[in-house]
Picture 1 (cartoon, rainbow, N blue to C red):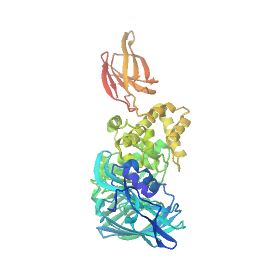
Picture 2 (picture 1 turned 45 degrees about the vertical axis):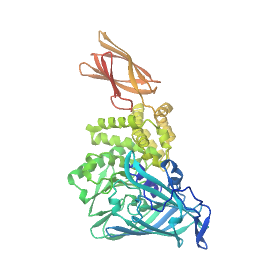
Picture 3 (picture 1 turned 180 degrees about the vertical axis):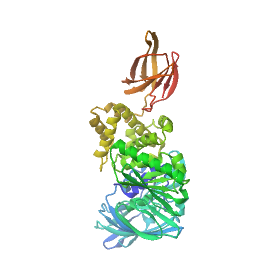
Picture 4 (picture 1 turned 135 degrees about the vertical axis):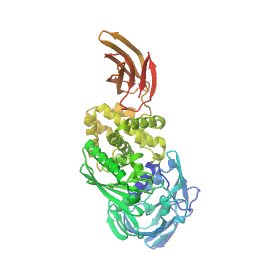
Length: 582
């Protein structure tokens, strides 16, 4: 399980949001010394402040070491959080215990806060020693756009806190005051929990939380419920689940949707609830879960929690939990009418990310499962869905391979080419593998991938090995073409002849792929009597041949009519016969 801060960062980069915050205590000077300085504190614990503290501005390409420090922690944390909301500000206190601290350094990140010191006022004390953030070094990453779209200028800031002590366990407290309505006014920003907007570089193992709300407000915590007034919550994953929590001005509808032996609890703010559109949303949830259980042969959990957040515009699964957030400010009608794929996609992550982890290729698997659900949910729009995805791959997905995209910096998922390759091309490539292996073998491969990679991290080599074991085939050629190359098949028709024979017409032609792929290719020949004949042609090293007898004269040839692969689409004529490379 990754820590809650990583989950926040994943939400940031995957959802086209991406505004991370900082205080105004920053500098653009070169990195200062982090190993020398004056210790301040008690005899057995002191903070080491660098002589020349610097918060270094980093580009996304330079941010890997910074991110490694916060999303690959060795330390673990447990704590008590108290929050009081007055309708304007959240005032909170977090008393924590850090264990397994190594290297005499810990990290504090400020997430999702605009560059305005009044939004988040925060004080940190460790072992009774106040920490002066203005005297610390660290790094910050500027965000101005995501997936080619401009967003509010903001930062992710990480403070490096070095100390002198032989202790492996540290106690401390964070007190803070957060202007919560700022979150409500920034629907594209979701870099951390809207209840805190800070995070520590330590794996959470438990949290007790006490809350107090004004009359009429509701606190939603996925996996726990919707609460009014004041109370206390406790849980091993509560800190992670705060990423999907929010405070709503008004009541929240909580409904259970049983699907394929799994209970899905859905939270919808009353202002967004509509009985007519609820029926559509319920259908989407049911068909998605049923499709995934039937396809994978696996129920990863007995219950799932789905939160409709009225103050956000993106969607994400909360990593390491059974919960997902669907953001939509305009009501659930928009979710079921225009953003139909958001619920199926995040539910798919319960299987691919939650139950088994395939790193960034979780997105390819989830988008593939999403497509299976959409085929049932909106069958009339499925062909258009595939066509639009193929166009996206052709336009944005040919500058980097899936293999190379898997090695990118986490924040590079914000780049349109990287996200297109991991999400859309990844899903389409799995669809192509399904065509190569057949439904039964491919679905057994999905099941086996989930079983073998449960509780582990698997990469592309593991995925290839699993499908080779299940199919009994050597798939190096397929993974080499589709995962390691930036090319797409580019088909044309050559040497076409039509001969009038006694029993009909004989059609011959060569199917040539300018990209030299080896692939089975579905070919459809339409005849003058408005009928068609389908066949599959094996194209090896870019060359295949067709020789078939037809009852009527051919008028059209369609290459890949079932959209089984992403290829370069074009229409042309050969010897008076139209050719549609689909």
